[in-house]
Length: 320
Image 1: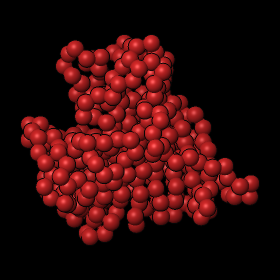
Image 2 (image 1 turned 180 degrees about the horizontal axis):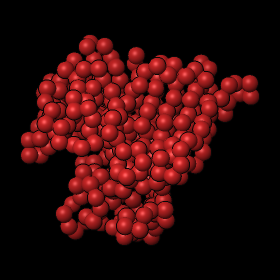
Image 3 (image 1 turned 180 degrees about the vertical axis):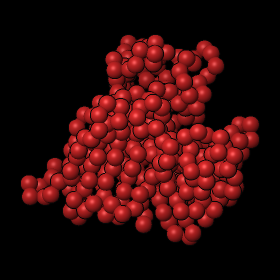
Image 4 (image 1 turned 90 degrees about the vertical axis):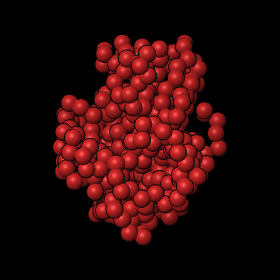
């Protein structure tokens, strides 16, 4: 809950003379997004619809790290295919009946709700590497009527997106603001961009038990130190002891995905047939250039009593 050792690192006030990140709000209505750019050129773009990160560029702004479908809806008409959608308060299809989330759509409502931009703060560490932190809020009072009817519980979400020179930190704070306890699941559905999925290895999952959704939700254990993707994959790895999952491409480290107060990770790639079957997945062979490494709390349920807070997220390090 709130009192834990590994809280996301605090940001410090910038010196008066230091150049600051530029933050702009562009677009109107459901297409509005917040764009932050560091003086060194790195940038992040976050749609207010879903608080979905749709772009993260490192290496002075030269390297895009996130995969975004060419047919992704960026107008608020549906959840974004790509980037980093926020999944809350249920992962996947909800329980069929008897659970407070049973009336919700797949993956809940956070990724299809309009969030409020709460503001920015900037920092500078000892190496003069600047950062900018963007905060977004979603509250029960701001939900669409349909979502409010389906999940009539009082909550507050604050989503913090922190851009640094070589990393992106995304953290969700969930607060129970009502008189009743509630249960939820949470996931950051991150689409990482790669050059060639056939040359990708994912490390850090050796010995971990996973549910294989491609094989009728059967349970298995990761027996190889490196996971290679050669077909459709949809696995939920649970209770992972180490905090880092690494993506290596063609023998070179590409990403480190570091979980913070989260124990589960989903690995997903639709491969050929499923990619073709999804109307908003484009190009059809885009599966070759992406892999989803999704941190979350999805095996079982997180429970919050009145006034309690849960916080968890990730730091993605771009290693190019």
